[in-house]
Length: 185
Image (tube, rainbow, N blue to C red; front, side, top):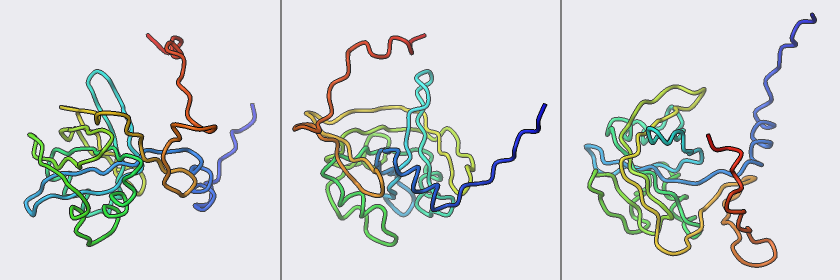
């Protein structure tokens, strides 16, 4: 039996380039700390489990905003809509008054909910674990809602923010209703 070759890590620029071809959601995670509302833009957010209902986002380990979210123990994931690039930019800047860009309200769980978002997912902190130069933050979903009407998501793809096409020749097409039959338990 031949030895398994050891893999050499991909150079950071190649890693970023290739993984940039995977579209990701753009969300703003918010919480309320002792100093008031806090929030940060994240580009890595996903559902984890239906039972119990869990989600995960990833934040840079050195982020003061992420530390404040963790200290709060609860947070709201605001899934940005395709017309909220300015919100994404504001919450990604250091030192800016991030909550000055639009309307928001405190939820019953005291996490800011951003007006105009495509969806909101309110969570209690389940756990946070180191994941390389990031933290994987796991949240237990307590409440969630989607915006009325047809609000498309903001996505990050190949170094750019974009919306999903909903009309015209390149528009997203509806999938067959039972397309995931093979996936069901």
